Structures are given as C-alpha cells and as structure tokens.
Length: 591
Image (cartoon, rainbow, N blue to C red):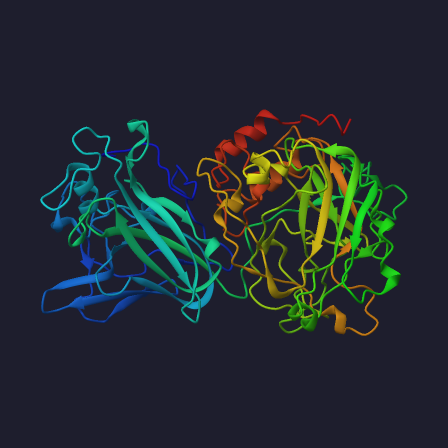
C-alpha cells in the first residue's frame, strides 16, 4: 500500500481487516461484478441511460454530452494505483474491488443533486465498503494546483475529508445520517493521521428502513468556489435486506432461569423435577418501592409482590404494568411502571449484570402478516437503574420493527430489538430473560457526574411501552469513537411497536408489560462462555462457528461471539484465539 496508518472514523469503529461477505440469507448484495466491462475500462453514463442497477439497487448517473462530463455513479475495473489527477477519476486507490473482485463503483458528488442509490424494495441497508479514488487520494497526499497537501508543510494542519451518508424513507424523509472520514489529520499525535487507501466497511443499520441512500462529501480544504478536495470516492459490496424479511443484528439467546444439572447446564422446563434455578444468578429483587400501573388495569394482575424473588417460568405469576389506549396516549397519560430494590447491589462486572423476565412466548403459527412462526409475541418496556432511588439512567435501546403489530396475533423479530425488556420468551415451558450490561451506560452524563454509580445499583425501574409507535427507542448517543458498545451507532428515531392495543381485547388476562422477576447475575469471567452455561466447551465452539465470518448487521451475527478486544464487529480468527485460550475453563459459580 502507498500510505497506511490506523484507520479510524468519527462515529463508527471500522474493521481493520478485509471482510468477505458471503451470500447471507435474505440479504441482497450489489457487487457490480454483474455489470459487463472490458478489461481496464469503465462506464460513466455516456450512453445517457441515467444510471445502472446491480443486486436490486439502482445507482443514479448524470451525463452531460455537451461537456462530456458526469456525476453520480460510474463503475470501473481499472487497476492502476499510481496515476493521479483528473485522469485517475475512475480509479479506486486499492487497484481492485473489495475482497479481490474485479468491478467497483466510483462516485462523483456534483453540484446539482446528491448521488443516490435507490432500493428495489424498502429495507435495511446492512452496510457497504468505501475507499478513496486515486484522484482524491493523491490530491490530499501531495497537493495539486487546486487543493492543498493535507497536513500542510509541517504535517500538523488539522485537515479532514468526510463522507456523509443519508437515509431517506419512501416519502423522502430523512431517517438518519452516518459520517465516515476518508482522511483525518486532526489527531494530536500526527502519527495517527491517515488517508484511507483500503476498502473500509461502514455499518448503516442505524438508518433504519430506507428506500434510498444519498451521499455527500465535505472537506476542511475549501475556497470561494466550495470544496477544493476532489469530490470523489469509491464504493463496493452494498448489502441490504428488503423490508419484511430482515432479521436485526441483535442476536442474543438471553439467559435461562432454570437448568437441568444432568444435561450440561442447558435450559430446563421449570416444572421439570430435575430443574434447578440457574446458578448464574446470585440474587433477586427483594422489595417493591413503587408500583404505578396504567389506569384501568384488571386488579387480578396487580399484585406487585409477584415480581419479588426468583423466576418461576409461570405465565400467570406476574404483575402487569397495564396498557394505554389511543385516547389515553392522546390525553398525555403516563405508561405504567414499577421500581424494585435489592438487598445487595448490582455491580458493573464482566459480562451481563442483571436479567428481566417478562412472560412473552414464541409463536408457533404463521397468520398472514400478523404472526410469524418462531417470532416472539412480546410486550416491551424501558429499563432504568439508580443508586439512590431518585436519579435514574435509562438503558439506550434499539427497536427496528418497521410496522405496527397486531394486538392478538402480532409478533416481532427479537433480533430487531436491543436493550428493551420483554424480547425473550418466558412461558409454556420456556424460561428465558433479557440481560442487561451496565457497561452500556458508562458514558451517560449522570454516570460521569456520579449521580448514578454503576458499581452500586440499588434500584431497577421498568416502564411499559405502549406499542403504538408513539414512543421511541431513545438510544441517546454519548459518542466516543474509541469505545464500545454497539448502541453508539443509533439515534432516538425509531418508533417502538409491540402487541397493542391490548385494552380493547375482551377478557384479556393482562395489559402491557407483565413482569415476572428481576435477577442479579454472577460475574462472567470467561468471555468465551458464549452460551453462559459456565464452561467453555463444544457448544460455544458451535456458536462461534455458526457466526463465523459475519459482521454486525449481517444475518448470522451473534454479538457474544465477538470475543477479542477491542471489539471489531467481526467474527474471525482473533475471536477463535480467545476461545482456544479459555478452552474447558469453568466459571466459579458453576462449581
């Protein structure tokens, strides 16, 4: 490579290895290799067709025959990495497509309208790869007659070149933006300055359901006529999942409330005589501090003491928070909530820290668009924690369910939900809870200021979410590009849908979120104990294998398989090495 340093970006941790995207189930991939080109050639729209399609995605192009000029998207297979200037506008600086493919796209951001790629069907764009063009790379690296050398004569000028990617829904309304630095010289240590010269992956699932994606470029080097840096970049391997078939990236099996000691600590029916409480739990809620259900709740389901003590796996041993009707929401009535306390504190330790059990269940039927087999009939809730019972921090959450859910048969895909209680089943012989990790609120201002001590959490508050779409996932961004977790990617712009309006259901047993128990976890010292059964063994290896060579946002991804530090959002040999290091080790709590 010509010029390579550590690759970073402003909002997204970038993968520092070249990934191979396999044909993921349900995903559509645009690689441009389906477009015919002679060797060492390019297409720039001179046929005035207005664009081209690859992998179910249309890429816009504007060609002006009067000036033999173009903007928007072109595609190329040029391999020359040394030519600079205007003559190299169709060259990607790596000299080859992502993952060694022949073709790639080149994008020129013109003056009139932003380049756009339009999806055949609305869906979630999992991500894409970008790099610099020869023209922009050498202009920044050496300077030219129009643009400065990045860093200036001393190399310390805080220059930057940024790509902004904007999602638009079917009505043309912006769903979100993602920024990625194609060059960044703003570091205090000049040795960290970089110009991207390899294919880098950008996760775009934060944009939600989109119909089109638009691209813009900006630079620190501007003049009277706008940006001096050549407004080009290269693009390849766009992966998107059409609406209605997407499974979100939040694959997590949850934590079993019970185990069978004769069956390798796997899940057991709570009613089975062999079943015992999972020893991963070290405590349970001991007191109800406050209980404020929504108005109109059936009193049969208002015994808040049922939320205390260990989980039972019963779909009737619950306290309901109630649901709000459309009229109650319009009148500004507050959703139901409950606050629990614990005789011993919850502390931020390795792995998950506590678990919330609702009484959702897995659907076994398919019924038009209302119910899908193996999906969850769920009622969701926000989760908040406090050290003093007054100041609470809400867990940032993500909900990618695209449409309202039927109140009788409606189901949701659990993989589209992150950090909302109720996404796991706990009924009819299955007893699984939703885990929460206090490290995900480390950067919250109230944690930074000391109002909430994540090593001394005494209270957990559960707040029902009426699944009408009037409430949002509220994944507030406290951005630090050098830190994990994954919710850093998300803004609070996704409506939350679940089974609603249950207040209209005759003889409905309960309404809204139904709380069964909240349990405190023992520390998980072995990160490679992926299935959380207390030992690193064949079942963990099988899970790692099932997620092998997948990245965040791609079907098959399992977050707990991303073992190596720092997290790179990719399951590869570095994660296998961690598993090998911990092979057959056992957690103290299992013994």
